[in-house]
Length: 340
Ligand code: ZN
Image 1 (cartoon, rainbow, N blue to C red):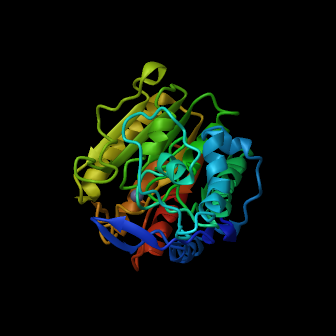
Image 2 (image 1 turned 60 degrees about the vertical axis):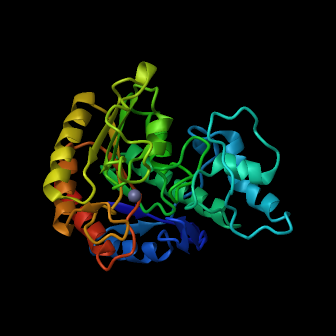
């Protein structure tokens, strides 16, 4: 299996982040990549650079004005004399808003949903390259590789069609799923990050051709709070094609594997031509975001279960934050997945 990663992904490195009213250091840092690459090496994957793709691949799941905002918004922001170099909104529309503002502070509020997704001068280059890594991995699978791993940093599964949030700007897993649709009539996305994949859910919510399944900490007690409930099952033609499997916060291996069994049965029943695996490692027991209690060995076991689907699979990296075990957890997962 190959790992796809581009150095430009690490230029994005905002430092500001707010949680519980406290402005602190953001957990989604370039150091994550150092540790994840160590895991990639330990699992024996060959590392390759992404190639560039036309931006219409991104526009297939994101609005053009959002892509324009990601590309040019920061330069506009920096024309405001008192602006801090990390673009972060202080006002957001809560109700369904009618007017798309011209003012950059208004646009920042429209397009950024929380205090964990600041935009710097480097963000566009990094998120675009992260999406290119995902698309390059997808191309490998479209061309016959059984599986490929995209080391996507920044991650993507909280990104909406035109909204950044939860350290995510472009929804890499959704971009991959849409790309795989050119060959496969049905594609499934399985998300095992400890946070609900709310952006991915929204992108495909009304569609029956892309099944979205997410296992995550119960949103009644955990980010993203408003999304990820079991009754959110899809709408219109997509009804029944979104499956949320919330588990109690700090659940251990047995609970996660039971939920995964349910998820895999649903995926098998859907009979997709390919799978996108949104791989978060933040359900680990030592992760600082404290949403799960999965062990390193538990990741190996879950990987073997998922590999048992025997589907062509594109793996996109989602969360998983700084612990001494981060690289080992990725190695444990990738090794287990390759032992099919
Ligand atoms: Zn996460």
